[in-house]
Amino acid sequence: MELSGGCQCGAVRYRATAIQDNAHICHCRMCQKASGNYFAPLVGVAMADFRWTRGAPGTFRSSEPVERGFCRDCGTPLYYRNVQGGHISIMLGSLDEPARVPPLRQYGNEARLPFFDDLPHLDGRSSRTEDDMGDLGVLIRRTTHQHPDHDTSIWPTKESHE
Image (cartoon, rainbow, N blue to C red; front, top):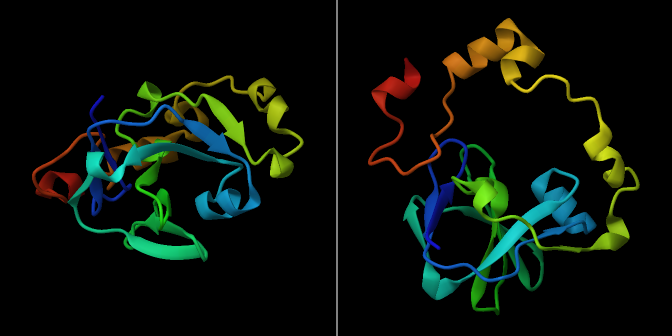
């Protein structure tokens, strides 16, 4: 399975030619903070099967053995890596096609938020950003600077700012 992905602004892009069978979400407090979310969705990739195709991420050592990578320009969390290990764990949401890699397990349940099981039952009547946000949603979509969900030869393009 070949996968590509990157940050929101397109400054950092990557390609993985194979993934491990360990797609998961981690609820631990460190992953919550690193992702700015209730959990971090990750999948492992052997370093031999992974390469940066545009730019280079910034890094933060969240603990002595762990490095976390992010885009220095837009802040998108991109990976978790044990610096002594032979693989990198990429954030599933940074994939161009995140639906291709569904999580198989959960870890860090000691910090799993108590309302997590109730999330599927929240009101979600509308299905599109424009329906929820009206004119602002239309304006956001029309003027987005977000990199598209595929590789581009150059970024940003002139068209991305018009």
